[in-house]
Length: 274
Image (cartoon, rainbow, N blue to C red; front, side, top):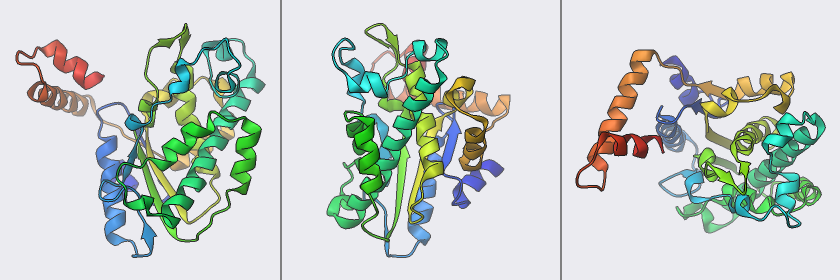
């Protein structure tokens, strides 16, 4: 498909977007392998042979904190349904900017660590994701200061591939608050941070869920932001027949891989859809 080829070959296509099961992880890993194969030796590719950081391994546990306490995460970063329905655009925009700066700080800090330490050979390291998660415990003003001070310590090219950002958030309700608005904002802020990244030798590529931007309330961003995102995004598009084949194949795999002796179709569907 043309959009897949564009993502694999165009260095300016940083993000691949699609629903669960459409092959985002496959294409991101393929791009990482192609880059590693053809880039100069003086290039850092974190996580050894596996290459991609994985959001499944870095859960944002602040979501379960008590909202009644003095909680900087809830106050400065967490976006609830009330933030959307109250139509407080300034507050919503501020929280998205806070998340965006947290991502920018994580990008530069992780690249510094990957290029100047032995972390690049450690497949268990998710430096970018962990730096982002840690920044959510800090006051936004502190994060901005740290981001501005995080001038790159090396001009060595660094390629970081980040998968499953959506899985940093466990779906459901925590203490009566839906996480869906925050789940959307988390991925939107990642995209916006990439569009603002000024360090040309740091290359970030990632995957986001199609549903995140499709469910995007217009209050989340200005039109100019949407234009920026379109330049970065590769949107996976399939015909109805393509989608049916993908889901049938994945459900068949889920049945064959299930740990249960007597797998049922319902179990396979639950395993596949999550």
